[in-house]
Image (cartoon, rainbow, N blue to C red; front, side):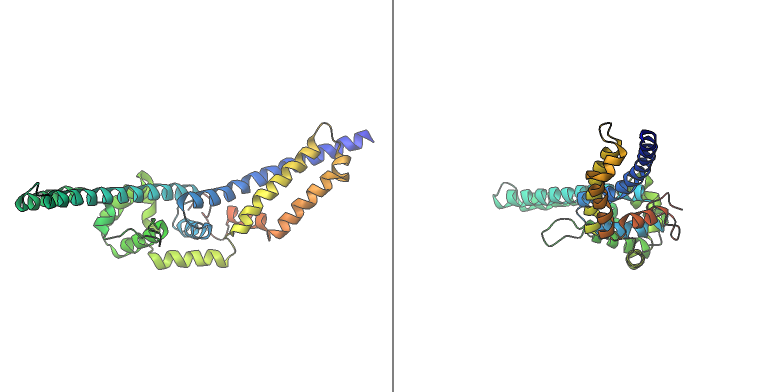
Length: 276
C-alpha cells in the first residue's frame, strides 16, 4: 500500500542518512591520508605508518598532518637559503676571477659571509642533521625527519630539542619532542606494528573509497528522490547501485571496517584520534 511504501521509504532514508554520515566520516580520513601524502610527496604507506608512530607519543592525526606541512615548508626554506648562500659565494669567486677585487678583499668578504651565515644557523645545523635527497635531487622529508629523530634521541639537551621542535614545527612543536626522541628505529618499529595490525590502507583501498562514495550518492538519490518510490529504488537501478556498493566494499577487503577500527583504535589510543 501507499502507507507501507511511505514507511519503508522513511526507513530507507534513515538508513541512507546513517550510512551517509559513516561514509562521510571515513571518507574524511581516507581523503586526509591520500591528499596529505600527495602534497608532501611521500607514499601513503609512509604517511600512515609514521602517523601511527606519532599517535603513540600523543600526537593525533590533525596535529601530525599540520606538523608535516610545516616540516615540508621549513625544509624548502632551508634549501632556498642554502642555494642563496652558494650563489653569493659563486658571485664573489667570479668577482675575483674577473680581477674586480683583490685576493685580500676576496678573503675578507668570504670571512664576512661566513660570519653572516653563522648567524643564520638553523635547528638542523645545531643538531648536525643534513637534509636528505631523493635520486632526482628533491627533498626526502621522511628520511630527513628520521635523521632528526636520531639526533633528538642522541641529544640530552632538552632546551635545544624543544627550541628545535618549535623552530621546525611551529608553536605546537613541543608536542613533537617525545615522538622524535624515540629515534629512527622505534618509529619504524611502530610503523611495522601498524602494518601488522592491519591499520594501513593501501593505495588500492584509498582509490576504491572514492568509487564507493559515488555509488552511495547514486543510491541515496534513488531512494530519496521525490520522483522515485522506495519500491522502485529497490526494483531496478537502486538494486544495481546497492550491489555496486556491496561489491566495492567486499573488494576493498573491509576498508570501512578497517577505517572504523582506525577511528576508534581502542587497542592503541590516539591513532587518528585525540591522542593520549
